Length: 186
Image (cartoon, rainbow, N blue to C red; front, top):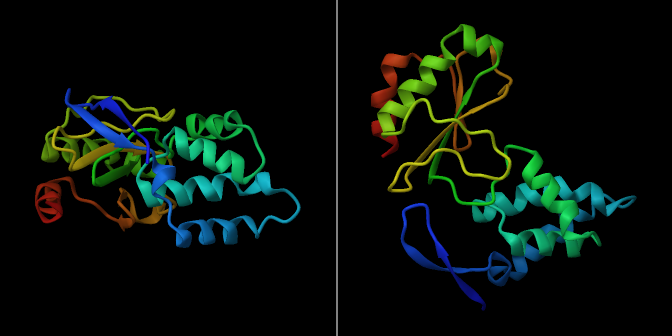
């Protein structure tokens, strides 16, 4: 298993292990099963494999880019361009709890911007910090517990404003309820 030194967001030097060195036979079998759904062009499995990888590891490191590219008979740049284009993918770890607040029209009109601000305040983040994806992690608390970011439509306009907290959709959010909601997440 290869390791390398990396300076974390918190200024500490930590030893990191390549994600690909921690793959299990079960992980590889599931990846093969995903690829099998794309018999005409394995390249079409790029996004499903990236989601699978990130859901497993929390982000996609260089070894993940290389492994997925090799699995699909592509060059690493073909995978890296997807990771850095789609804001959902990250090249570094986000918080253990990721709060994604919808910012599109229905949610914005229903108070989505105030909701994001209140989530940031409740977890201790600067509510005005910007995040635009491109492979970077969203603003994350110093203890690594929470990340808060804006995202595009979460497809629940009728119950705006909404947020996706990890994999759970929270609808009809009232900004005054956010401190209690965050307290439950701690």
